[in-house]
Image: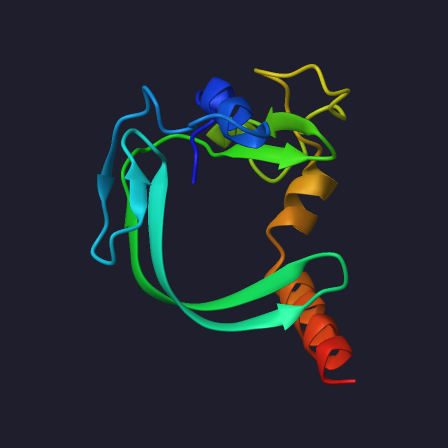
Amino acid sequence: MLAADQEELCRRFAVTGGDKFTGTPWRPGTGGAPLIEGSLATVECTLEAVLDGGDHAIALARVDALTAHRDTGPLLYFRRASGRLPSPAPDSEAGSGAGSAAPDAGSGAGSAVPDALAARAFSSSSMSASMASARSRSEA
């Protein structure tokens, strides 16, 4: 998982072609997969199954190790634009709705992600429903 200040690295890995690891410090994980130095967190997994998702393959994996490396916000990527979670409201304003971010217009680094998008992106129930839907399509 990349940190909010790693947008340039994200763009480098998002393009087609080239050696993406040139100039990128990394180390091998326990299973040999590259773990990028300076990342927000690393997740090491064992592949359990691959489901047909139409024009994509859906990988289901068992998490073997999850390590947080930095205490900062994540880099978010949605609809070809990156953004950041809004900063938490000060304690005096907590719960009042203050601190909500304006919608991101795709302005790049430093932009905030709307609360609704952040909630949808990290909703475990919506992820579970999506996985169940993908599984039922692959079994049909």
